[in-house]
Amino acid sequence: MQKEMYAEAGEFYDVVSDEQWRLRKGAFQQVLSGLSDFEGAVLDIGSGTGHGVVAAAEILPGADIFAVEPSPTMRTALLSRIMQTGDLRKRVTVVPSTCESIELPQSLRAVLFLGCIGFMDDEARHNFWPKLATRMSPGSLILFDVMMISSPQYVEKMHLAEIPVGYNTYHVWIEGVPEGELFEKWLLTYQMMKGDEIILERKVDFLWRTLSLEDVAREAEPHGFSFEPLTETLIPSGVLRKIAS
Image (cartoon, rainbow, N blue to C red):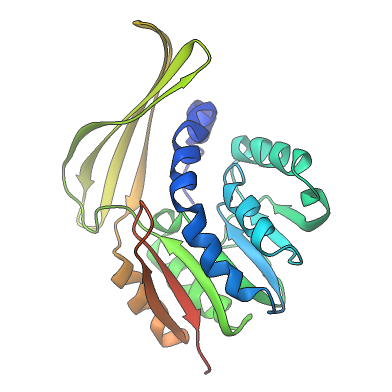
């Protein structure tokens, strides 16, 4: 994983992610609902503030969940959500690590790989598929997503969000510039405004390894995964389903 970019702008994270999760939660839960009779845990990689944890817990009430999150800022919000939501404190184990170094559960019915696949370098990502495959039985699955672009390119600055909270309004802008032949550098500007007055502003940037859904599918296929695109999600998303070896 990359540098701790959430230290500067973590308080703005859910301004964007709340809306995104409202639009795609149903599609993800529909896929996960087919695993209710499976054995094994749910592994949520890059859990962030816990949206995926809650979605999986609601639809798979008997499953243990391992929430992997390297960012201390995100873990603070994640643990707050866990402690305040139903019986999650009995079912969710928070793992303060990157996915490259975690000790995997013995059996996995589902892996959530959302919003973070482009943060892994190529070697780590290639090595991760066979590790997952050994812990997954036929029919178990990986939910994953990528960004809207699959190759580095210039992306003009756009207004990503305008969310009122009380008397303030939160704004998010994003723009992208190529960084070599494989990476996109994303630049984000976060603002908290009261009327026309900027109360707080933060600027962050991060590198993302550009990949398409098909790129990921080709990587995972030799390790016994078949690919299914999801069409009812705001962000390009897909399913890697374990097939018999």
